[in-house]
Image 1 (cartoon, rainbow, N blue to C red):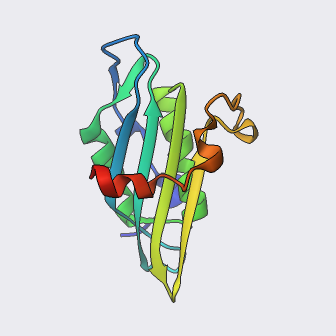
Image 2 (cartoon, rainbow, N blue to C red):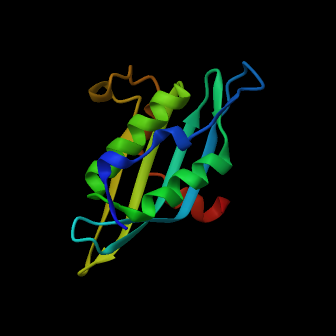
Length: 145
């Protein structure tokens, strides 16, 4: 049974203690990200996370369960990326979080949405300048993954 976007449960996400205080970057790719669009038709996307941890890191199994949970959620991808971002920021409080969602074409049109906590519009200080001339993140994954 389809659920509305208000039923997305951030309680599924589990935080683990960061094993170090040293700076490092975590990249996560979710290649089979699915949800129901506003017309209750399945939408498909690949999601790329770039995560600079503070005290907590993402427990990947819980992230997988969270992503699976979205399969029955009716939501636009514009709202979904914002909810996903808010939940990850609330649960993990990273130094930086960048999400890029590359949606599969529908009706001959595809789209790519990005949110970065470093943007001043998102309350960031814009200290990480890599996003100013980046292609959006997914191109480098072709080599890595």
